[in-house]
Figure 1: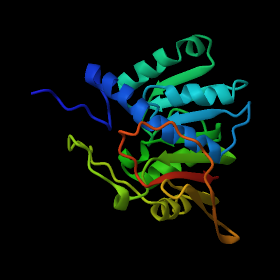
Figure 2: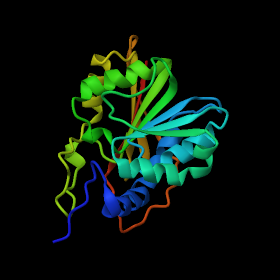
Figure 3: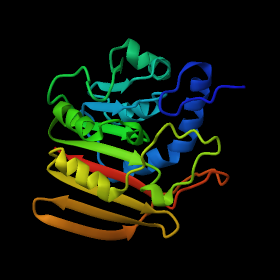
Length: 238
């Protein structure tokens, strides 16, 4: 019987194939997310759970005047991320490390932007993980969580039944956990696919603000893909 590859920690040949599949499935979500936050050309970036390294590659292209970093606790993902970005790695522009989100090998206040694409639902001890992210984030910096689902109400189990213990938080749960971890403000952008709208919910010391706007982002989505009716981009500021 063939071993079912782990979405949580891809390893070996089957893990490499799974990373390729996830790149295909998650690319529309990642490209949409970029419409919700700005990246300056000298921002120091970190992608947590960097997988194949594709998002690091895209983010570095937006910020070529500074180094970009990636971490993953899968050795296969680290290897594949380095290969994906080999030229920039060789030149010292992109740095990939094997590390756990609960104990990252970086000094305090290092990064302007930290991203986590389709990975937070696997994180253990999530409040402490969010505090560790905040430690390495500069004051005023942004921690960005992106996933193609907003809570379990919109969730369809995987065909192979292998969810690796994933916990699919919704925007309210993320807001509560991030504010508890000490972030100064949280903005949740909820993409309502069928309505071509996005709901923007902001929580800060001044209160709560909500805005419904048109979602003008154009996708090139494989029509065979199962698409959740709501995507989520959470932007937490330190």
